[in-house]
Length: 85
Image 1 (cartoon, rainbow, N blue to C red):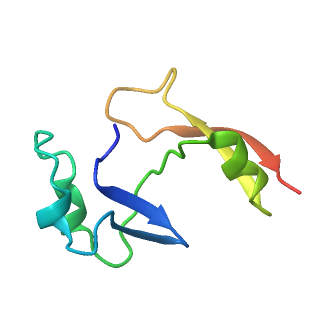
Image 2 (tube, one colour; image 1 turned 90 degrees about the vertical axis):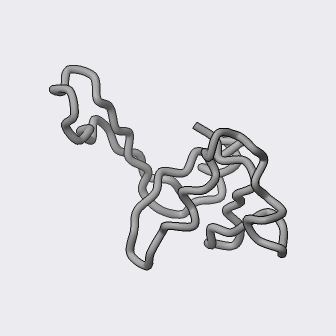
């Protein structure tokens, strides 16, 4: 699910406005407020707006993950791997 008002730029997760959450809260049912609670070392899943462009800009490995066939509530499994060059 998208989080309005949140951007990932230059390797950083940040508010869209320099005024922070007060200017970026879109009254979206609190979907964007989770960012206020992130701490150093926390993990998030980012979905790019332009997946093809994002993958082409990488020089690393991309992993495909899926929850298909996994028990409810379990972590997804890595199902494939691509080397991006």
